[in-house]
Structures are given as structure tokens and as C-alpha cells.
Length: 161
Length: 433
Image 1 (cartoon, one colour):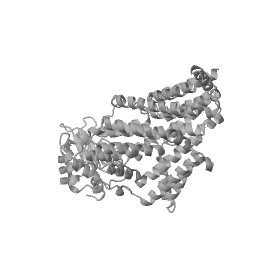
Image 2: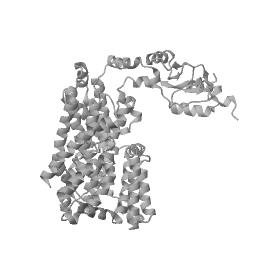
Image 3: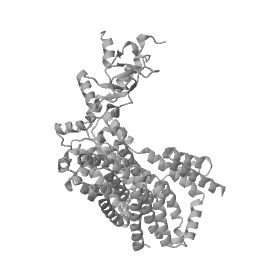
Image 4: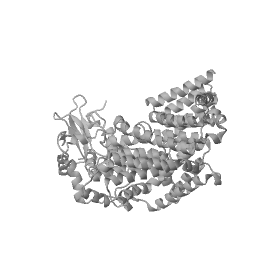
């Protein structure tokens, strides 16, 4: 049986910074920048985990809508590049302003692997490698967000810190 | 007689399963083919002989050519260039992109064409802040219209051309004239319905005019190679009778040659990666659907069921070419709006071939082939489920937050389709019947 040393419980960061579902994209931007985070877990008012708001999503918002959806359309239908757009920084800012007031719940990403406190560390490391973001640790019964596991948590242990 | 009914039952079950959309159509067709063999209607050899490798070769070859060519950015270039030619006015773009879609669709598969044009269209309409729905609607219809003009433009034509032995030029000479008229009518209808009421802010139009189409070209070397190969392939289609090559061989030769140009001088790992990607973009679902379907049809044909049906149809129309031709076109149009036109055309081809004795041999059947093509290709516009391109665009639109529902589409598209087929009706009467 796996002991604490072999599970996420041992390495996770408790009480992570998260964002409530009704809060805005602009608030998410400030939190991500202020704490230099890769992602924010989105939670309900009572702390139940809903999904992730990824930093890469903010970058996607600066592009035409069709680019944001390209993972869901066949390869042939994806724009190769968008160098033909001659947008300036001001145009990009305008594009962001159009979505800045929207709630983060509209941009929730649910394909990030969810860890349990009992998830073996090796699985957490594999998921970190594959998902290239950090991962939420959620209580199976209550759905409450308990913590996150980041690459730093793992590397910190290796470095003996 | 039992074998005949068994084969017809397998065909009917295959049709029903494809229509229900509960199972992927390639699985259905392959299972249908398997039933023909397991039930003893066809031997394994007969089943394999039923597969028309000319069609398969043409489909795969063209898919490979497009998958490599698109990496050059030429299709984005074309769409942006055309939008700028009309000073970025929404009504002008609506008309221009319909024409570009139709022309591209005459040489490429319809689904591929809309997948190439729709993303750029959405970027343009987003900049102009205009409703993208009319543009997407117009491009669906234009893709099915344009595809009708050539042998390689739409799967029903590929089937008719390769199985009947009609050339690229036969299609262009006989179908392109009426298709040009239908396209003009379509562009005008779109203008009356939507285009004339469209407006965009001058600064938004200035934004589109500032698009730099030259930057859409991402690989100049590949662009030159791909355009050269495309030109040679089209020239080969045009002169196929003289050079003695069939469409399948030309398509595959073009694909092999373009892959050669795209990979020569690269490391073997790079080549493997490149080619794996290109093969990955071939629509294997369509290819295996065709493979299975050919075997199912071969089974029905083998038992004589289609000959029997053909005789009865000829008797019902009094062996009158005009009545038969118009009936084939209208029935194909209405049915193709509801069911997948590929299995329908695949079944109709042997059925029409079997009518040859009643109409003075294979040459007498020519008007029927054009009637079948016009009905089956244009009929696909009638409803949202009538052709694959329709569903592809609807899927992208819905994901982009643009409602694209069956009824909203059909209540405009079906009357338009009837109008287009009516134009073809006059054309068939005037030219052949």
C-alpha cells in the first residue's frame, strides 16, 4: 500500500491561489502575472474544483477566435500562420479588452489531469510532463480543491529543499 | 433468386446504418462487404475485383497533393487577395469568396475546400464585425456547385468518371457551362438575400485592406513546386486520352512527385516524419467507406438485382430518354439532399449501365450520366445533411458560437437547390433531351 511518501499528499502545495468562477478574465490576468503562475484552478463559491484557467488561454485571446478553436477542427482547417494580420499592440489590447470582463467560467479547461491526495508521485510526475502546466489535487468525495502539484514541488524535492 | 434478395437486404441494411449515423460509415461499409463474402454472394476475389482502384487512387492522390500544397499558404493568400480586390466591402467579399470557393472546389474535394476557406472567412468577418452566417452558407452551396463542374471536383463525379470511363474534358465540356450559370444565379441570390443589406465600419474595412496576403505564403519554394505539380496534374487530366493515363494514375503520380520534391535532400528521419504526417491527413474514413461500398455494390450487381431494377425503371418510363433523364436528375437531387450521395451514385452507376440496350448502347446513356451528376452533386445543397461539406462548416460554425441549425439552413437552401436543378432541367432539355 502506498504511504504518504509515495503520494501527492507529500509534495503538494496546500491552499493554492485559485479563482472563483464568476471572477473575470482581467482578474485572472492580474493573479497570473502577480504570482507568475502557469494556471489558476477555477473553483465554485464553496471551494469545489471546476477546471483550470491556463495562462496559454490568455495568449489565445489575443488571436482571432478561429485560432482558439483549432484543436477542435481537422488539421487541414487550421490557419498556418497569421502574419498577414497587421495588428499593432493597440489592436491586440483592444482584442483583449473585448473579453476582459467575461467570467473565467467561460474559459474553463477540463482536460487537465486531476490528482487525488493518494495519487502516486510517479503518476503526478508523468502528468506534469504531459500536461506542461500544474495540476490540481482534489478530494474525491467532496470535490474540494486541496492543493496543487507543480514542477517546482517535484524539482524542489530533488534538490533537497 | 434467394441470393438476389440477400444481397439487396445487405445493401438496404448498409444504407439504413449509414443514414442512422449510429456507427461510423466506414465501419458500416466494411461490415456490409464482409456480409457479401460471408453469405457466399461474392468470393473474396470477386469482392476485391469490385473495388475500383482508379477511384481510390484519384481520391488518395488528390488528398496528398492538397495536404502538401496547403502548407505553402497559397489558399489563405487566395482568399485574402480576393477580399482585397473588392475593397473589403462585405457584399463584395460575400460574392468573391463564393466564386473562389467554387473554383477551388472544382479542383479539390469539397470538404477540403471549405476547410481551407472558412477559417480565413471567419478572420475577415471578425475584423469586419459582420455576421459570418451568410458567408458560410454561401460557401457551402458554392463548394457543392463548383465541385460539379469537373471529374475531380466531387466524389459522385469521380465515381461516374472513373467507372464509366468519361474524361476530365467530357465533364468540363458538358457540365461547366451550366455550372457557371448556376454559380452566377447563386451569387446573385446571396446578394439579394444578404449582401445588399450588409454594412461594415470604414475602419474595419481599412483593417482588412491592411491584410498583407504575401505574408500568408509561408514557404515560397514549396509554393512553386506545388503549383507546378498541380498545373502538370491538371494538364494531364485534360490530355488523359492522349497520354493514355487514367485519373487514378495521374492523381497518384502527382502525389508521388510532389512528395519527392518536398522530401528530396532531407534526412531519412525528417522524411519519415514528413510522410507520416502527409499520410495522416488522408481521409481514411472516406477511403475505407468507398472500399466497403464498392464490394457491397459488386455483390448486388453480381446477383442481377440491379439489372432487374434497371429494366423495371426503363419500362416505367416507357424507354423514353427525356423522361428517364429528367427523372434521374430530380430523383437524384431530392434523394441526395436526404441521404449520402456517394452510396446512391455508386448504386445508380451499374443500374444506368444496365439500361444501355434500351437507349442504343453506352453512347446513348451520356445524357443520363450528366443528369445523375447534376442531380446528385447539386442535391447535396438541399439540407444540412446533404453533403459532408455542409456538416463540416456547420460543425466549425457551432464551435465558433455561430448557430448553424438544420431548419435555418434548409428553409433557404432547399428552395435554392430546386432553383439550381430547374436551371439544369432547362439545360438538359436544350442540349441533350
